[in-house]
Length: 460
Length: 43
Image (cartoon, rainbow over all chains, first blue to last red; front, side, top):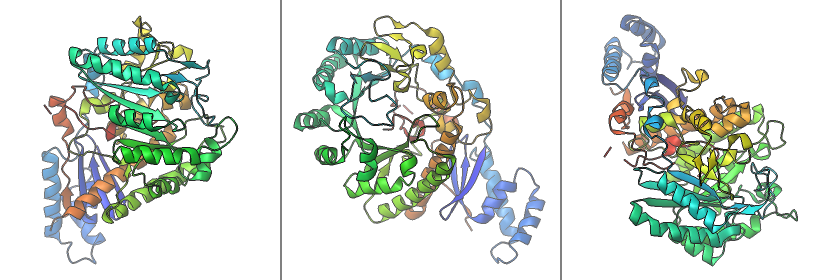
């Protein structure tokens, strides 16, 4: 399957099923579009007429380019057929009941009262609670026991606000470190925080033990403070920004992400990203709000078009910053073309409900943090394991080939079928299609690939 | 003249033969970012 598009000043051809990317001139762009439908003679005749004003477009040149296209097809870099459907599900089947990552909800409470919070101010529609050390320890033992032959295991300390249970977080990390060698495991810890309780102890420990920290900041002060307020209604920007700057500086400016949320109020979110860059933050992630369609924060169809243009603007600006020696990173534009995910990973997706689960303060298991509090999505608990095996099978069958609507979509080996939670919240089914999410995802991938093309041209 | 420049990329068909170890990492917490991951496999 071939996807062709023009962005910035580039003509780009993506061969979805081989992963090949070609940067072409407009003549080759036309030839690739016509190649499967018309004979070489028809292509040459039509393009000689179209480019009659150009001396470089000759019959000989056109036949040479057609031969190049044929060679790329033969080499498996163009028009590669989609033969992966039969593999869909095999990776998850082969993995059995392995679990390799947990989102530990160490605090179902929060010191902020953000109106757009998908977790209902950290309580997940339930009671306020903190995870005890014993529950956390059992969760980590459960992870080790169910991880099979996997070496790399991951734990994200999440909430609510995990720093409201900081002593337990530290104890759990210290316990886990004692378990790595005897079990031949390597743990990667991450911490997601609103920053309110960051102090020197948090900075020292997080920078020693957390392979990544995710810091919640929505950008401009007026945008951030409109939604991210404490229980007295006061904005949090002035209190958290200096703490974030101190933490990031102490980390050497690496292995963190500023994680913002944009809503209907700031569909012009690049201004927020650039504001974060002005504050000295370079590792950035900004995501569309997750909420009910009727919510005042929800993105409208008009917003979606604005956001798509914003993604393009961001990509072009990032190229400019890179040229000027002041690069910033945007999570969704991070593509490793030579060392990215294999086809199994691309088909099977994030692993929610199978190899990735969320643990509540009481030890209940859910497919991921976004399903916590939805009783029908409870998988089991950390003592008995997964008891709702039918639900696990439903998630196991979630993959890039699970939705008929995705047949013929060029992006499905990039989105891997998309986020099950987003699909559920948008359509009521984990196998539904969150169409606005698809639109934004495709635009992000187009921009990310364009940046790679631009960088390769720059190197030539 | 060169009208087509092909970038160096990982061959997905080839990755069917040496992929699937499951060691890669599971920023955003809302939008699936599989495409943004790095392989951590013999690959």
